[in-house]
Length: 316
Image (cartoon, rainbow, N blue to C red; front, side):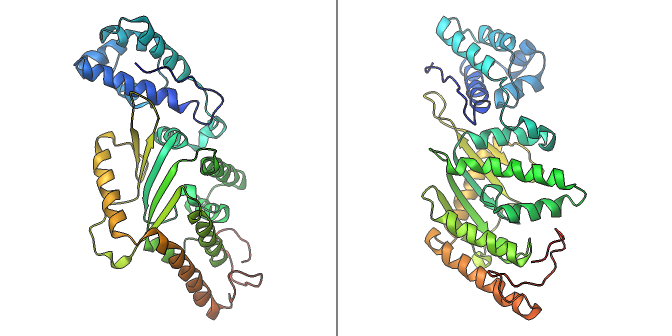
């Protein structure tokens, strides 16, 4: 058993103990060839065991020690490591004040994202959350939740911006995004906001840990049914990879990780090279200006615009 990682006051202080404990419990059960049914009986239910083995929930020290005994773990050091992880798994994350805004199924993904080594995703309808400009993010929030009050919109935007802080951490995750070209063509927000978003992507492309590719409409390949986000986390001697898959209506598909990786690899091969992305973004900015000219929105980069922003009630 590897030396214990002891959490400090870090953004992933809640996530990493849960994920480490989940991987170790799962590994112990499989190595000792204990059936899922027997292990589930030891903690009271199959649902609870699966939640513990996926890092979805805090794990009771009593349940962890019960499983350790069932798995034949007798040495004091290993049991101590498992106990410490169980105790730390109940810590409160920085996102607790936003808990009422977070769907339960999204919480494990959010935790994994904050502890990520690598985040790979394929975006179909909009720029991925972590790469969104605040104005663009706000426009999407308002559009997707038309009944939300200003305070809820502000809090949802605050949550998103807090998630984005990992991009500027001392050791940021490697982010690799494939954008379907439809994301650049679709007017998900007013022209001024779209310009800011494309300009923001240009800045992000200059960061060494962020790679953005554009999948042309003419690629002519079979596409996955929707957006994909695959997160790899942890640096641990025994645990080399833990991944979560995010799809529409946020669900976790642990058994489909290999298939998601296959899709992402296939899309990356078919997409344009990363060094071509800045040129494609500049073209998208020019297209915005050309499209806006007939309606009087002659300068999406400047101060003179007259089109109504029906989503926010502002003038752009």
